[in-house]
Image (tube, rainbow, N blue to C red; front, top):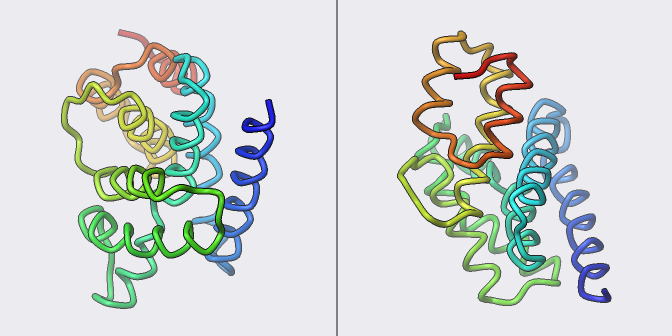
Length: 173
């Protein structure tokens, strides 16, 4: 029980750090908090153990941390640049915050480095992070019903994620 409480405190500290990091950019802040909320819901729905849930939620909070670094370094950003630039920024933030082992930081950074690389994987935390990001992006990008159905068919694998997608966009197969 103490570990769960400590994990919640660490997630709260990381949430506030990400709000501060994205100072002046409410769209990014809200994107991140929505991805975190959906990742949390899907992870719980899929029965993740406490450690995996903690890593998933942490990764969701820093998944787009490479955007500002990409914009500064290249003058623009895209998914690949986010994956390239994000892990170093995430590693620095997580190490400064504390509450993470080196092994945990490695996993979170791996998730950040692959969250725009969509391949079939048995790693549930990775799959859930991708699904949570898609739930938010499909809405924020005002995607068509055809695009949503394509993502449903080709990307979503978890029952919790599928249920959320179907209910959110009022679709089913």
